[in-house]
Image (cartoon, rainbow, N blue to C red; front, side, top):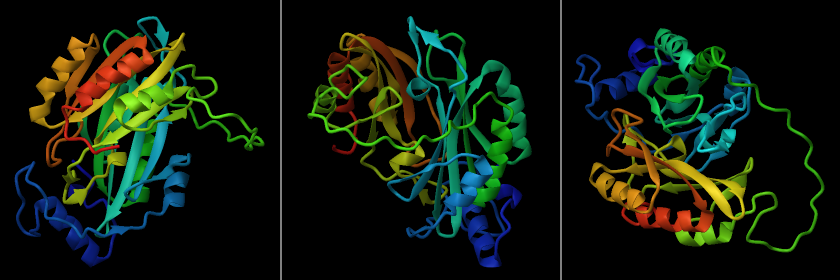
Length: 328
């Protein structure tokens, strides 16, 4: 059960009534079948106590576009290899939680990267805390050791949800965040298409995809939002909530890179994107849902390849052109 159905939130009567309305589709006396869209909430986003979330989780998040607060949980404790590439935590081993408040309520969504022996205790703890499990699946194929991803959703009090997720992460090997070092004094450098330490043509990647990425943790990352408005339980979900296409490049030397990520697709887009990727030699590693009741419904198609980074970007750009994604 989700937090909303267990009256998890301690809130004033007006907020509790709104919470019940969102969970039942607008009625406080009768419930609707699962999957029926909730009544729209006020479009006005409300403030989240990010400091309290940080304290509950034991790490600091980032304020993102669309009034989303997002906290990352990379599995830096794992050494995972696929196709001879040792995967960086930020490349394919990261989990996250995203919080957004609207109409007096907070929605939390996210996913957790787990080893196979962590799945059962984590699932049990989530169910004890009333947090919905919306998906459990692979993202890659043939990596060693195997990593599973468990997606979650809850509606309720942001701090209580964060405290519950802290208990969940304590059952995993997810390491605490690394200490933050003081920033070094900036050193003037000439503009370059290849950020220091990456060794791939990021300007060429951006041009091929029509979107600009950013270097982080030795990985070049791009996020492409959908053009449609995505909503769940009556609350809009911006790209930072996880309803976007994600493309990550991990350099492997000589201008080449491993690439992975997932396309966020309407059902009608799946076959065209899959055919484009397979035709370009990319491995399609998973096709599944991450959530249950979002509208419109999205399928997520995961991929992997190792090749020239710009060549890969061109192939991914051809697939992206078959989607109704936002323009860069």
